[in-house]
Length: 196
Image 1 (tube, rainbow, N blue to C red):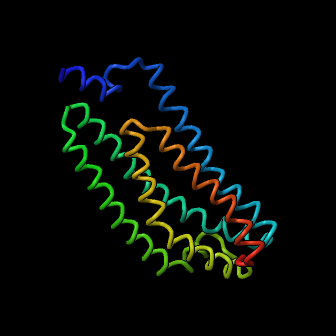
Image 2: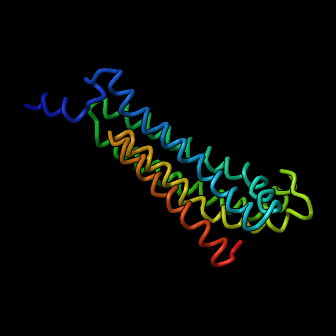
Image 3: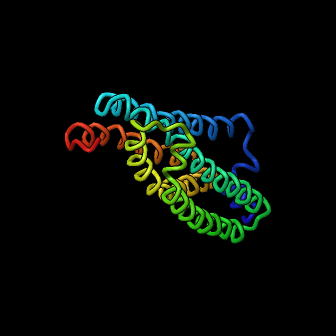
């Protein structure tokens, strides 16, 4: 009975590779495409509502946002490997502790990242090529983006845990909700509320 239960719980250990690739790779690829839509949708609405200076500002802040994504990926992929290894060893308690440690560590690092970016935002903007015309837009946009780093990083880490725990479709739908909300809220905030 215990062997049957373990097999049912751990499909990664017994399922065919082709089926697993389809089950995990397709939602992951869709998630990556959806994630890239965030920036494209933002660029379209900002270009129409703010203009080329707004687009320039988002491009100045893009490297800073990429660093945040890299931190999230570091913790998320590390968590996925740790989680999978310990589930494979039959040690779900240690796997669960890994999730807790990854979430706490990524929270602390994301807060440090917010403080660093907010303290050095203007020099970073100059480093990434901000002109005098673009700088006010970049500072305003960068401030908002930096404040969102903890939510984005923690969500990415938890999303990795969900995917690794055997729910890649759930992880994909969680990302889809964010992309759909972004597409709906961008025009509301830019055109209706006039927030730029």
